[in-house]
Image: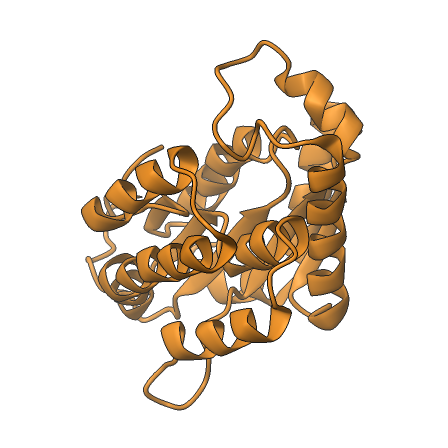
Length: 235
């Protein structure tokens, strides 16, 4: 997955929808297995007659993809890293996420702001309050609220298990090359974020068989209000 991709509307459904947009994010450390379930969830919503936009962070727009390349390869201090993450996010929100939600689509993103708190705040030890300030600036909506996902599926996996899964799978990027201690801090960062906003988080134990992980994803989605919001008229 690179740039955002949007499916065509279901037959009989126009490009705009009377149904509200829904924003779902997948989170977890590298190797947690979240990516293998994103497409399946998109298909589930398509079966409900919904248009789905699949995207990712960092990335999702031409500008954000350029910044992604820098973030995954170039050495920089934590503040620079955080600023580039949020710059990419701002472009992503303005040009992909908000327009799609306004059209009544289901937006599914492989990572969003929770990853910044986990990787830069947890892994790098960067100032959590500065990240909160940047979050408020970058994700501000005209009504005064801050753009957040309706539901976040957190694939929780022990870093040692994730490392075993990634071993030899591909050439590691800058983050994947970090130490086990770094990923322990990242996992703790996700836990802290989940504890602060439990109403939108669903913790998925990612050390199970793939079929059970999918069953847990399905149960979490169907138990959340986003499922009621997202169901099409024929559901």
